[in-house]
Length: 212
Image (cartoon, rainbow, N blue to C red; front, side, top):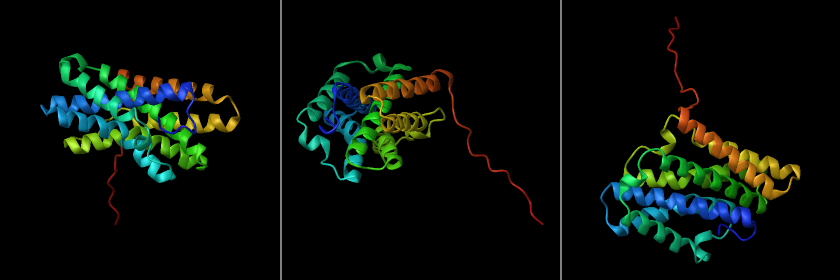
């Protein structure tokens, strides 16, 4: 889906997982805002493809959903699911955990694809973070609500850890499917722990001082 250059059964599963989950979070947000089905479909598409689109433009790759016939139907299908199910089914922490699964899946995929295009390790890891986070940021900005990255518990950090493990693991020569699966599990475990126990990095706290 996000580039035949790097897809294997492992990345293919992670790709579909990330796309469907992010599309669903976008559609559900529109549903909670009492929008029309057209708006639900728009939110599903923008959330599902936003991060991957920015990544592809930055690394000089064809924008993945312009050539993949399955991306738009998956987003439309998730919008239909949101339209025909009560929003209360998705309340609580379930959607947060699902979003974490999509976040870390896209972080793996984005990093691996960037490396396949010859991007150096550090920028490749950043592409993983962008792939995982930008779709949700666009969703929240369009909806006029505080972005998910502004929540106190670890979010971008989980994507960063996943991307770093992906890039570092691929550099060691370990079989790529093992690296990708391990990075996703580790990143999702970190995000899940942050949701469960409200784990957060220290916030900036400026200490005021008087200088004579």
